[in-house]
Amino acid sequence: MPFIRITVFGPTLAPEQIAHLQNETTNLMESVLGKVANLTSVLVEQPPAAGWTIGGNPVRVAVHVNATITAGTNSATEKARFIELMMKSLRGVFGSELSSATYVVVEEVPAQSWGYDGRTQESRRQQAA
Image: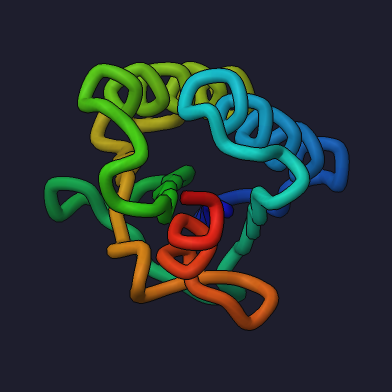
């Protein structure tokens, strides 16, 4: 049940670009990290007014990806592969204007600290066992 927030600064994205980011991110979560696609939430947001700098210099296009997953469900290799392929996907959408200092963060939350439909991930694990 991952939640991915993609924050984009720059020109307004077309609906097709947003859908591409959402679909590609969901596919990567499923194919690389083994997450269930129909439980994967992807939010693409564009702050209405923002000032983004990298190295103290203003940028025309900037993106930050934060993917929240249950702690201990993926290996370091899987997370590294997700970060690599997510960056490749972002470059496909934003091109050469996207800085190499674009961060993709995989944040792990303990199973007892989050859930969906009113139940924690820990309670789901215990029920399955």
